[in-house]
Length: 116
Length: 111
Image (tube, rainbow over all chains, first blue to last red; front, top):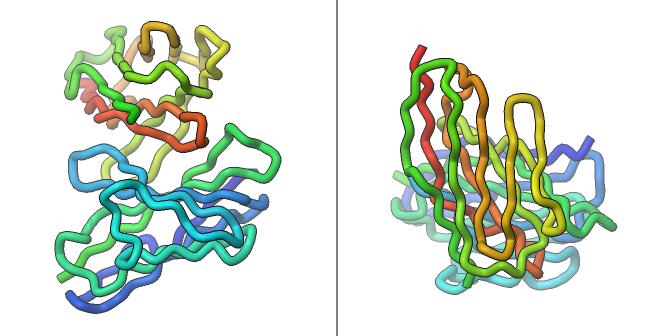
């Protein structure tokens, strides 16, 4: 149990376009989901925290108008990179916290975004 | 803000050797610490989770310790194998249930 999926696993888009990444908890309800970004040869950096039905909380330095997060249901959160630029190319990973399990999080397999 | 550092950044050892990876964090107010493995271009595989009240956890050839007061954790890998080659990340969970990740140790086990 406790599986988190991400879709797509890889995406290539042109500069200036928008791309949406989905994060789904497959067999549990996730009241909170987290989005991370990982640049090559660097560690994961927390971008934002989203609670179901609420606005996301963004980490300092992360543009909320550029990285739109929607957590409309207990099993789905989406990250939309708007007006993507080559510097947005990165590995995006989500994690989900199960309802009633405060300290357990489950990570998705990640999405590789390449902006050309 | 929590800062997590891992030493060494890279490590290369011959097969069969025991090794220790180090992790330090600046804010001891954590809920737990977790060690992950990441293969190139892949997501995270959870290895061991230590709650803040615990001192160590063991799983197979892996043993992780936690000294919360000094802000340190170690991951001990016994009898290393080529299949252990990967990047190892430690992460601490803060009071907001957010993970802060270390810089990672890239491990290569030479056959």
